[in-house]
Length: 332
Image (cartoon, rainbow, N blue to C red):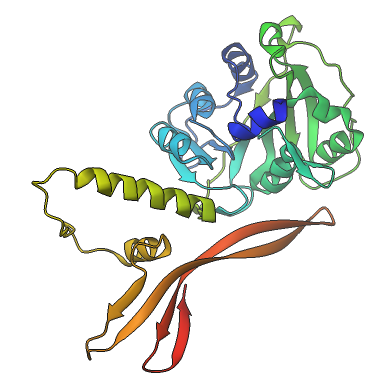
């Protein structure tokens, strides 16, 4: 049941308020570095509240960057963060590596299959964007760090690691911990190991550590790459049909609609792919062509830590049949 609840909310667990305040007290930096700034990255920022709080704590002269898969939460985050893109962190384009001084990572809590965890996949994919001596704030269920392989991997990339349970009266819900670390110049198996759970509560530790967040030039490229699934296309079709039906209930409205502005190519592709413009289309010479929207599943394989990870996406396009010419072709 816990896993189903996680999937329903897309693994979204906002950082509890008291814990957020305690974490902020462990981070410091300045906002006056000339052209350089402190750049903060949250690969699954939700509504952006946590990163906004850290951003305000570090100083308004810095910049906050968020990625969020959920459309509504991404829209909310875009109102508060410096830059927000809607999409999966595994598909966004961010350049160069080492562009951020702080990686705030409160990832989805779920299994990724093949013995992998979503929490570790997010960390392994995002670590390349953190600069040397950049600070990691990793918020995950405590049981993730019961796995020795996870602790060894983190220790190979980060030094000065400390781990704490979140504030005690907020711990019982999801039993989360916060791991702090400073990124090494290069991956190395040397250094202090990360101890196994259980860990002390943040509010019971006499003196919490402090981590200085370094400045960087920030990213030169920060773009999303939203994937449209078959389910989303079908859902859009029913929603639009319902709105059009309700619209025409008013007899004063003409059944012939003309858009206020010319449709862009992207609008036409969306309408055709959703099935609204399927069928015969007249050609200038008096003939006709047939059009049909389609989507195809594609799989891509990436290698991380000598392991192959397969990601399924969907490519959408338009299939055109020209009866007069006796041929067909795809546009995508």
